[in-house]
Length: 188
Image (cartoon, rainbow, N blue to C red):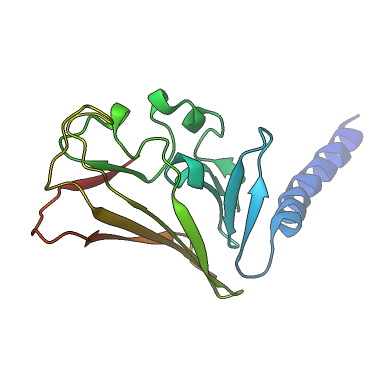
């Protein structure tokens, strides 16, 4: 009995060592890539992937990251259904002006135009942008701030091969004749 138990344990140990290698070999793609995909609800998303990260950005939800997976372990960091419930506040990279309630921000649920800037095995980059209307406190509140209106937000998200992180640049471009000092925060 002891001999059989040792054989079973040895086989189990060998399988547990081989299985992660097989899983990571199945999931591993060389380098980076970006593509337009459709999720199970039929919503268009931008998939950006490297050997380390798989993330889905949703242009119709202000380019929020609605799913983020650390590929070596397969761990989902963002629950894929929660960001679509906009009042729940889920997802990564949500734009807000200070002074607007994040739950009723004018950017919440807004479609961001996007452009795939780079799609090589070494690096992928996608830029997302919109222009502010400048509502105070909440979208369509009836009061517009001249300090917050006519500002183009451009976010460029990058993944580089071999890097276990992503980068993003956020540009605030004043498209008005007046000087402005908006306070911006990107949350989650």
